[in-house]
Length: 188
Image (cartoon, rainbow, N blue to C red; front, top):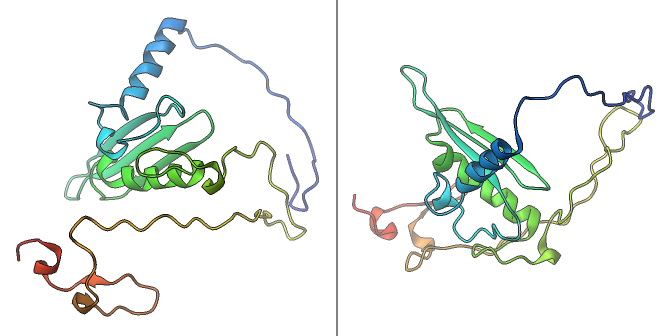
């Protein structure tokens, strides 16, 4: 335990209190099933095309919660050997549909991956996860280490480059919206 001023008050050693009655084959099968979620044919494969599964194995589980009278809620839990990312979006749709793109972008930034799954460690925000606990400031807040900015390459769908004349003006800091369906190639 750490006090608000950052001093270690008590160290609690882990203690084994039991063991799940699961054999090694069951664990292996579970791992294979969770890996298949982001592989071709899996429920999140369409969001993780090009993911370097051979270099950065990922396991995942999609979920969709239903509440009577409301839209479905997206749930998506993922982990690699280095990181765990879990996202839920209330009334956001399906797990892979709503949460999938955001989770993918977080992993891309952490590992320095492009859309095809090529890794550039120099662009990775955290190519190796932090193993130590964060430092605590005298006021009790967590000291956040400096992280270099993440500047992904712009992605415009082919043939649909933004036309400045068709953008709706937005308040400062808000993204512009396309003004006409014709400008997006969609039907009105």
